[in-house]
Image (cartoon, rainbow, N blue to C red):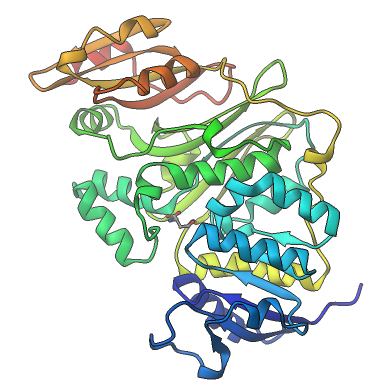
Length: 416
Ligand code: HSE
């Protein structure tokens, strides 16, 4: 098949847009021309010729020479308008905007299906790890049983520096911002939203399951406190923000994002700083592991570059799993073993939500429980008004999946 010549219109020239500009300049073999770059603030100094820049989106969207729109802006609502307009006018789109994709996935898939115009977004999940194309192309629908991933680079950087350097979470966040990893609104990172958006996208390609972001339960890292770090250190565990998805025995999918204690025998234990990692569990291949930088200008630009290159070969996602007759539904019947830190005022109140309790601990300031709880009950509990709660997953109890190695209950009560 002959390679298609591409004329690109780029939206956004921030961290990733600038990275892409540099990466394209170093990839002369790619048959592409960057014709126009649409930016918001015309007076910023930029390391690219002035004639490239415009503040008028129409200069790209209405230009018949431009056959590919690369969308790398920060604002999900504007990104949605750009992407939709581009697709409907027959321009292929490459985007890295996970929030926009997660919020509009069903509609965008429908537009792609009716127009046949490609929409690629490898950079939206785990930046440099080619996870979407692997889930899309390599895994057959019923072979994948679970995925667990560290999918947000900023929170992984923060958790790594907090454990290794004893940095406060705020100080570590400031470093992640300075390194260009964090979202411009960092609550999206620390609150677990960004990881959830990425999980929504992964679910579509792993299992063909398209859900709204608000259907996926998530907790971020912003509630993690001293007791959790003491527990981690005492048991040689790390705390990671993990996106989980499990196929249940009935064939439905349970998905959630939770801080998770990870033991040294887990592949995700060695995934530190800005690195992301994804562990897949399949029927026949057993466990597989992907790792790479999950944020930053060049790692993200590398995934955008790969999508641009794929377009030259007329590549598009087929969404075979999504389009297959058998549909999967979200499930909440999963049971988790969790560590739940609570304030002293609520030390007994939460026990009734648990199926069983293995350990309890309190000191002068706070306490924790370790026990088994359904995901549905945990959601109810976390919506409890006024309670200061911090859950960390220890293990998936049901369905039996990748077990997180965990300390014993006796060891748990010794932490002080
Ligand atoms: N803020 C995101 C992260 C950027 O830290 O993972 C890459 O999607």
